[in-house]
Amino acid sequence: MKNETMYFENNKLKLIDQRKLPLQIEYFSCKNYHDAEFAISEMVVRGAPAIGAAAAYGFYLAALEFAGLPEEELEKELKKAADKLIAARPTAVNLSWAVEQLLDLALANLNKSEEELLAILKDKADQIADSDRKINKKMAENGNKLIKENAVILTHCNAGSLATVDYGTALGVIREAHFTKKNIKVFADETRPRLQGARLTAFELMEEGIDVTLIADSTAATLIRDGKIDYIITGADRIAANGDTANKIGTFMLSELAKNFAVPFYVAAPLSTIDRKLASGSLIEIEERDSEEITQIEGVQIAPENVKVYNPAFDITPAENIDAIITEKGIVKNPDKKSIAELFQV
Ligand code: MRU
Image (cartoon, rainbow, N blue to C red):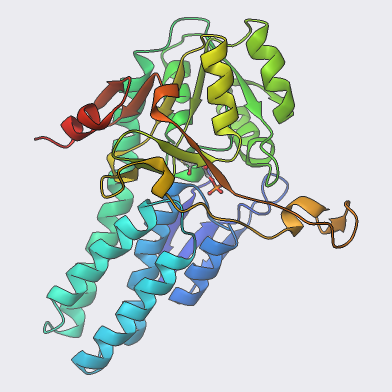
């Protein structure tokens, strides 16, 4: 059986524990919203669309716990749960995008019976998760149009089925190219410090039978300069209204290399990752994570005790470095404010 990123069963959210992959395949069980909040902030589940869907189920767990309280108290508890879930990680907009939809729905239906309210919220969480699968497949088909036969693709972090409910964004495009027999090859950056490339992307692509070679992040420049890379494809955590894109730290550096050596640089992301409220990337909050992610490996200290550390989890790639944003609604070449806005016109 394929390993599911997440599923909901017997009033529990089950998440494949991405801290333990690929060496152990274990599921982490969330029985209340605090567990979901922990799982998101500790990166049991990670990747923008995946944390959005997990938070939607997390909010439903809060509703399960508090439904039945008098309306005023219920409203207070649900708002508190929504705030906590949204604050679990600040950069990926999919988190607030998902939780706010459930909160709005809950607030509009507080007067319904306990059963009715829970059914409405469960349907919404299921719908967010199910539509992610379909969106990723559509995005992959769109992105595959950009990929030639025998292409060599470089990717960063993990924007695969593990970062979504299924299929992936950047890795969705790669999967689609593979399934349509384009004979592609992939280089995966290991992606310091959390090693999502080494632990997750390499694992996921090997399971799929896709030719993948793992490299240290610092090897990418040499491969790009030597003409060994045809495309760079990454995912995104938040895209501002002008196309500036927040993604895993190191993405900006790749985009500069891509520009310098004229390698097409593509971002694959669903519309739910576009934050039209933010005019440019400089307004995107960048999460900073614990210093231990840099000073330790698997809990073993490798740097001097108390060394100063700077550990931003994401960086901003300016829109002018991006040749195309691949979405479920189509491909936006040379993204800017106008072309991004057009995506949202019906
Ligand atoms: O810190 P992470 O592992 O959650 O960061 C994930 C990424 O940066 C992904 O590229 C992004 O969320 C897109 S996932 C489809």
